[in-house]
Length: 474
Ligand SMILES: Nc1ncnc2c1ncn2[C@@H]1O[C@H](COP(=O)(O)OP(=O)(O)OP(=O)(O)O)[C@@H](O)[C@H]1O
Ligand SMILES: [Mg+2]
Image (cartoon, rainbow, N blue to C red; front, side, top):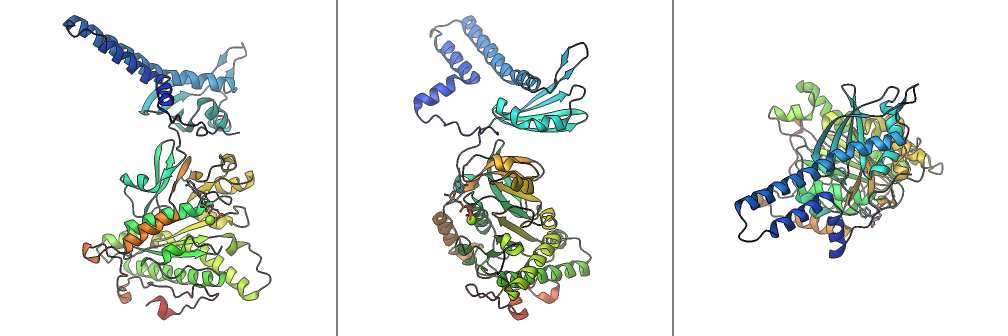
């Protein structure tokens, strides 16, 4: 079982905080130093003062070094106990040998190890859960120049990450940056612009809709409609995404039917083709190269689909038109996932059912980033992450694993529905004079190899999509 480092309750009272402080070696040393300095008489001689300062420096230095050097000893002990060592025929046991300690942050250390004969990175990774449990933190391991590099992260993952507090900090650079939450390393961000597509999976109540709401709210707050367009396909009949249909960023009302989804995705596919053709004509590689030479930049389009299984495996009771629409939608979704990167069209696909049927391998291969909330069974976790970590997550809404270049557990950003509504309403009402007005900008000239999609005419509540080339290009 995975050890939930966050399940220990934080001391809330002053006495609890004091006890916690006094059990931290560095804090304890600081208290001793302060006591030492304050015990000096007011008329202390220069010699007494110097002696006190030297004592303090030695004590603090020792504690800091002990804090750092104690860690390799602990890792050695733990790995040895787990059998990650080499036993010589003579009976001597050779364990990991520390080759470097690099302190990256207060609770973040990078250790370099020489592995004993016969012990591989795979062996270490196979015991990762047990090591993390014993170390009371998260470890990230990889091989570099023949050595094992192990990052030990002991920052606690918070139980709650507030939307406003998270987005107060400056985001990293990127085209379509969204926050994910806080991990052992601290704030976790990703750039949809470079991902370019995202899969969000997990069982009911895990936090998928809240995650979508916070990410879309942030995108709407930080981009104008001439930079970003949204298309929301909500096949679960939920109301969470309706909020975004009220923004001028929206390409239409929320699509709620399979037929509507097929038509909308067909339009998106046509837009992909138009943009690809424009790129080909201009001899450009992608949307960034297009903008770099001073052409009017294309709006990025984010297409959100909740729930993917409705398009991939839902039994539609033999209704031939729905079945045909489902097939079209599935096909177009796969094509957009394959071709969208170059033309700035991004998918965010959610599913409660991460299994091989609901998330076809071909589509999964093109969804480079995965947010995996808790899943019921190991097999669902395997589909999302290729390991069982999402099945071992604590039962806490918003707790998830981020899988991109590596795996990282985090607590997702939380935004309440009414807060998101308030933020969006205030943004939409912003005066245009300030340059951030949210009135839908006029359509660009399509003959100039520009984009033509502006609004998809979906009769939202109805079952049919009423698309026509005129409406798409309006
Ligand atoms: N990041 C979070 N932090 C704290 N609480 C959260 C977080 N995300 C979700 N929750 C809580 O969990 C509840 C369910 O979340 P949400 O509706 O997003 O689940 P879901 O995965 O979309 O479920 P379903 O598959 O049934 O649609 C929310 O109402 C909220 O109370
Ligand atoms: Mg939901």
